[in-house]
Length: 393
Image (cartoon, rainbow, N blue to C red):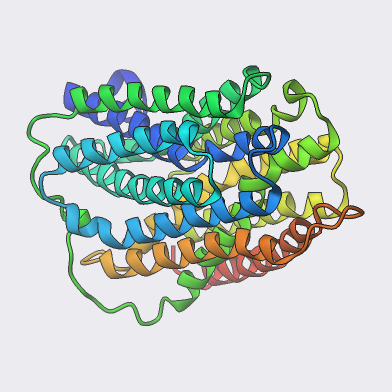
């Protein structure tokens, strides 16, 4: 028997369609809906449309919206195609609409709404596509869906990189159009039988006692990755003003995310999830540590590769471990982990916002947040590794 991960061995058109729908949906929702802001932030600062403090507020608004969306997505498990189509359309509209907003409050409101839509798409698309792949007997292919996040980040980063001479508002409009194209593709490609409820997003309650450590680790991951994920291009811009140079950090981040997921899906499917998570968390700690010691462009690029190359691997490993831990009903544990993750994301930009921007040290808040992220990521990574050593395999 040949390896089921090989594309030529996909057993049905339905499996291929589910995989493509998942990749494109996550590229639109996460790569653009959530993270388009990252490569555009230094360009918006350049154009004097926002400052670093306002940028942190907009980022926090998006993460609060993501938390709200994650906590409400379970209520959308019926009429999956309609709700997924609506959410994808919302991502496209809320992204493009930034081009027409010229107030801090309006921009924060749009980023908040985009966060809600992005979370809905993530939950609905993952549930729908993973259920289809399982039904077709190729559930191991599910990991490939998450390469879509890296693909979307790369597309947004390349557009901002090559179009850096344009107004930031025009780039928002272009990214909204790109999201709309992806949304139309997904709507047309979703099977007509996908409007029923999906078990993996159904409600329900169940015990989560004994998993506090996993919840804390996942929340730490949310805090640790979000600081570089939000501000790396801005740090690079402080070193080099040419967008064709500093803009490369975000495409590098996205490529690393996509490639790392593909490698893990292909080569490490048999490795225990705790071990994968621990290794990814440790490498991420190294990535967040680099800007603390030096903010040269080479260091920031290395940080982008390390953090970008581990954040989706950590996402996969953490959620897979939750499902393995409570196979009968993982929803309560998944919900708590998602809430902790979102809370960590909110804490990162808020912590940066609390530090006043000083001319002599313009990124003092980022340096402190990166140092704290390094300590927390390293500590939780060690805990996960030691926990894995005591588990039967």
